[in-house]
Image (tube, rainbow, N blue to C red; front, side, top):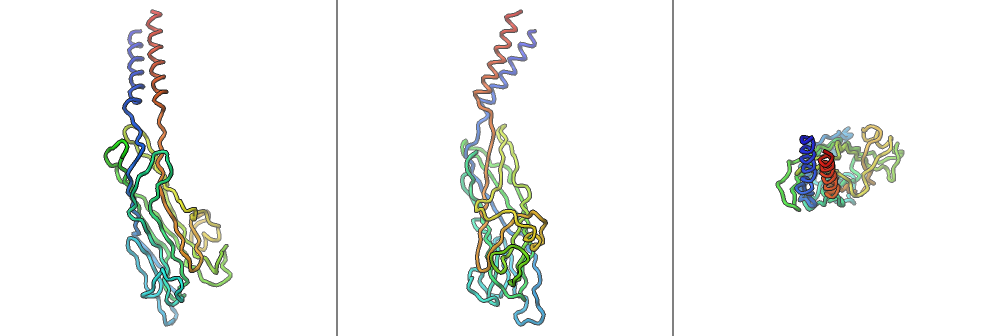
Length: 269
């Protein structure tokens, strides 16, 4: 019986201890990078057309295609002078994220959609990689291990002739689908489990129709955006950090209950 009482006392002490030592991190410093790592292109209708295939370009921030020397921000350019692009901004993104608070904004991908000449090569697929590093601010702590994620874009530069073959507000909207992979992950810091979720803040990214997915070469139920001709549209990303922690008062009450049980057993001897 003494052994049982001793065990109860140790158990109650263990229950009370986390309430005293496990402290929720309420604020995190975050750094998020997002970079294009690859792009593939589809050949235009180069059947003796004097404009040729145009030029394509890809670096960490920009993928563009269309007229040599053209400017994708010039949305009044004629098709033979125009370019289109996918552009990453706010990279790297950094700031403060609040545990169980609202989303913290990170990177933005902008689709610059311009009507380009049919002879120019156009984007087919693109790959982007993102990294996230979190450092506890309140209370302060060491940086956590960097997390990497890969996104894949399937793109359709549509022919600007009706009928489009899918739901469209212009003749014809370009389609940008994105395979996001795992949108959340868990990590443990100081005995507490935190969940990080990647979110989209603009509301522009959503599930497309089967016909729109098919036009972009994606499977039904794909997620993406459609962009009007001669327009630009943003996809704004962010992160949410959440954690569920038992109330210290509940832990303390459990410990007191076990201590009381041990005392009752001792009195009955």
